[in-house]
Length: 87
Image (cartoon, rainbow, N blue to C red):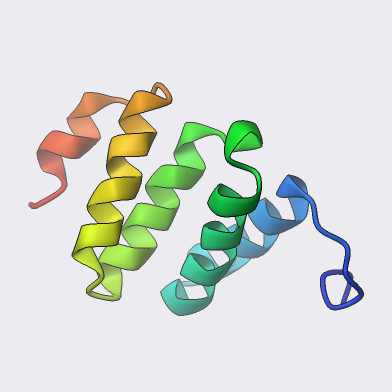
């Protein structure tokens, strides 16, 4: 409701993305994480790039998923995740 009223914040997008991500709704998780990383890239912690990448991977969007994993690593995420991505 808050987003529908035009309010945007990194925290709201994180919460919305997490709600869907942890409930296995990767379509909606990807939607909110995408808004987070594009609207607030400087305020986004690496773990959200990872979750966005995993959500997109589950939807078959591998190219965009890999891009987000690269950003995840560049922002300080662990390289181990990249190595195990295709497993």
